[in-house]
Amino acid sequence: VLAETSVESSWAAGEQDLAFIIRRRGVLPSSNGGAFPELQPLLDKTPIVAKFLEMLIVYAYHGCTTCRNALQFLRSRGVGFEERAMRDTPPSGEELRVALRAVEGDVRKLCNTSGQDYRSLGWKDKLPGMTPEEVLKALSSNGNLIKRPLALDLDRGLALVGFKEDEWRRSFA
Image 1 (cartoon, rainbow, N blue to C red):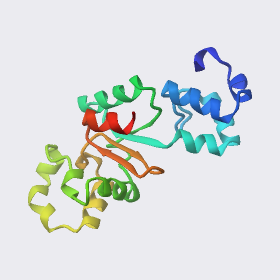
Image 2: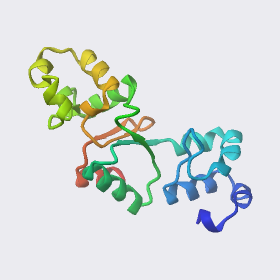
Image 3: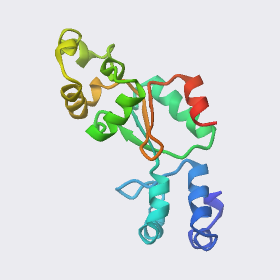
């Protein structure tokens, strides 16, 4: 348990052990120092650990009950992840292309069709006339248009759009 283990002794335990400890606790450092800024010097010395820690990215919105349920699901299973605010930092085009493959090219499945922006911007009528690249560009600039949560593991090519517990259970068994 990280709270009971000093950073230096965790470091002495080895890179894999440190990554495991952090992953099991569900704590990932963020670019602004994260919950445990004392880990940053270790991560700077060990890019392998930093890469490992950032494998799973979950885009969510704090006011979304479904997002909170998905995050709790991951925490309860000891899955480490980096949470990103969907509205403030929408997924990149590359990340959305991975998600698009996961939904078999159906851009509508990436869209938050019940969202206010989707309705007020007239996306129901616009979407059929848009190319997939136009949709991805729009989604990457407006996180409110994206179905949430969105979990991505780019190394595995994994993308989970929305929270369907059975699907998530199979992915994080």
